Image 1 (tube, rainbow, N blue to C red):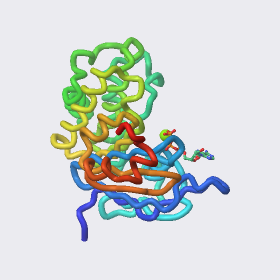
Image 2 (image 1 turned 30 degrees about the horizontal axis):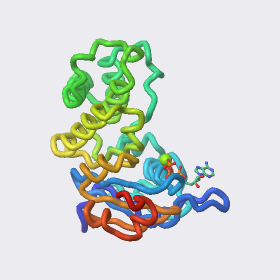
Image 3 (image 1 turned 45 degrees about the vertical axis):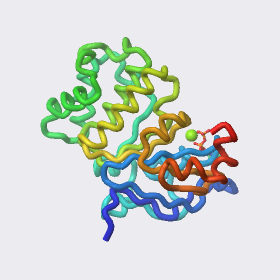
Length: 239
Ligand SMILES: Nc1ncnc2c1ncn2[C@@H]1O[C@H](COP(=O)(O)OP(=O)(O)OP(=O)(O)O)[C@@H](O)[C@H]1O
Ligand SMILES: [Mg+2]
């Protein structure tokens, strides 16, 4: 037995001849943040799609806790606690922030969705914006709403694909702070794909590096940062 919240085993996604992801294994422990980095086209987004069920596996297995969810679709995985954030909030643009979060919680089948929504808004400092129409939010605030929608129903795992993209330095810093707080306060484990190296090395407990659909390094941030293969493949001499 192990106590992994998430375990991807030998996961592969091939698009015809393109081996976008080719035999990746990674784990998440409870409350852990794993940073996932690598050059453009390395397969980071594809592995997130594989874990969430958006893409069918060519090979391998995804375990959520003790359950093999490999054959389940996106919605079934979400209902079991595997969540991701999306970069879109315009679907219900005319609705207030609170209404959107509450509706998302209700759709998850949470019995007290008002309380669930309130707790999530509080967690992300969104309460002052609760009555604002989503369309009227600033970009950084919208991204926090995306995260709020991903957090309803108390997921155990959160997958984030470049959540800092387009944010100001201050907004990135705030979001990083929220992510760290979440892992301890809500017991969420996070897989964080992000190009902002200061953020990744700053808040990750462990870092995994992809190149050409495979893991080339994995471990403590300081070890990964010092790994010659990583420096050569990705970080460059400036890192
Ligand atoms: N639908 C698709 N059909 C064919 N090839 C694809 C498809 N989606 C992605 N790929 C290819 O799979 C590889 C991995 O792409 P992916 O988007 O996962 O990389 P990434 O690490 O997320 O890159 P980035 O840092 O630019 O976001 C790339 O070679 C890409 O061109
Ligand atoms: Mg990507």
